[in-house]
Amino acid sequence: MTLSYFVLYIALTATSLGVSIYVLSQLWRLRKSPGASSLMWIIHCVLIWSIAYIFEVSLPTLELKYIALKAEYLGIPFISLAAFTFGMIFTGRGKWLTRGRFALFSIIPVVTFALAHTNQWHGLIWSSLEMPEGATLGPLTLGHGLWYNVNVVYSYSLLVFTAILFAAIAVRGHRLYRAQSISMLIGMLVSWSGNALYVFAVLPGPNLDWTPLTFTLGSIALAIGFSRYKLVDVLPIAYNSVFAAMSAPRTDPRGFGH
Image (cartoon, rainbow, N blue to C red; front, side):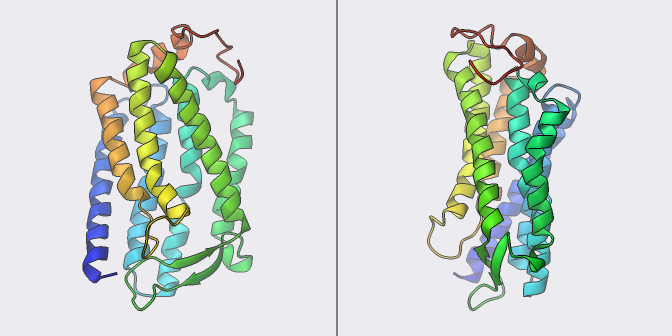
């Protein structure tokens, strides 16, 4: 893989940072609205991930790249939890997510964070780390440990559940909520498509993590939902009435099941 390829990747990732910061600045104005803090949490986590990943790709030694890799895990484990929290609030189930339940859902992300920063003692996140073949520029070549896979399953379970929540509103909800849900669903799916390419090593060549780049597109979808449909502005309304607007049998807005 040529030097110019990595330079282009870093430039695109830096651009994604600018887009994410713009979306974050827009959400800051409505930070007191229900759901806004969860969206801001998602973007903060991805910003940390993106910045640290640029350093992982760019730094010249294994030791420095390893420090950057650990820094990525200040954000990575918590993104799916933040998305799940937003999905619960947006679909009127926020009251179900009590402090105790939120603490339970936080166990795996917190453990993942702790294990990533102590990996040299157990290898549960990364079983091996090697410099890019024949170069210093590029991401580390990683072997993944047992807990890495636990975190992947946990994260994608939360994301799939959140996508189902959005999809239910998109299919059966009032047209106002439908537009918002479609925007959020597209943003989330596009954002995590890059992570799926990385986790399952679909693309040939060095296994670059495309999540920061695809999150740029996801942020654009989020910005469209924010500016055109006033996504966060209507959350107080959605919280009280979104399930009343659905044609399907109603559920208790504090619970999961039908």
